[in-house]
Amino acid sequence: MTLRYAVAEFVEITPEQLAYLKRCGPFINREELAALLEQAGPEQLVNRRSTSWRSLSSQERELAQTVLNAPDPGPPSSNAPIVELMLKNQTMIKRPVLIAGKKTLCGFDEAKWSGALCF
Image (cartoon, rainbow, N blue to C red; front, side):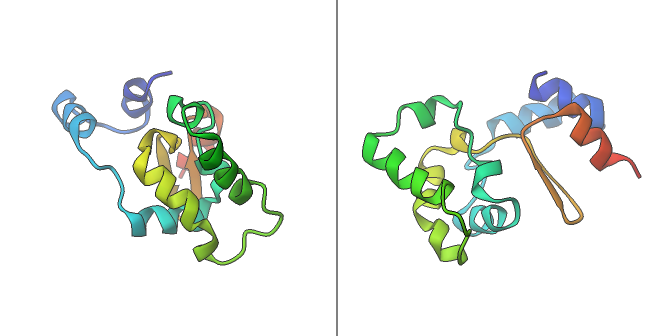
C-alpha cells in the first residue's frame, strides 16, 4: 500500500494537501528526530530496506549497527551518530510515522494503524 492510499484511508486529505506534503522538505530537524528516536527507538525507526541504508559506507553502517544493536538504549546522546546519518539520508526514516498519544508507529502496517486509530 502506498503512502497516498494509506493517507486517504485514514485521514481526510485533499489531493492538493497531499501534493504539498510530497514536495515539502526537509521533513524533520535534528531536535525532532532525536526526540522521535528516543520515543520510538532506533530499531523501529530506521528503514534498513532503503537505498540510503544499502548505500552507506561500511564505516557508516558499522556506526549505525552499534547504535541499533546496543542492548541498553542509553541516554539520548548515544543516538547522535545515527541522528546525523538519518538527517543526511532521510529515506532511512521509516514512513509514515504516526504519533497517537503515547504510541508511535513507524512504517505502514494496516492492522497496527487500525488499532491505534480506533477511538
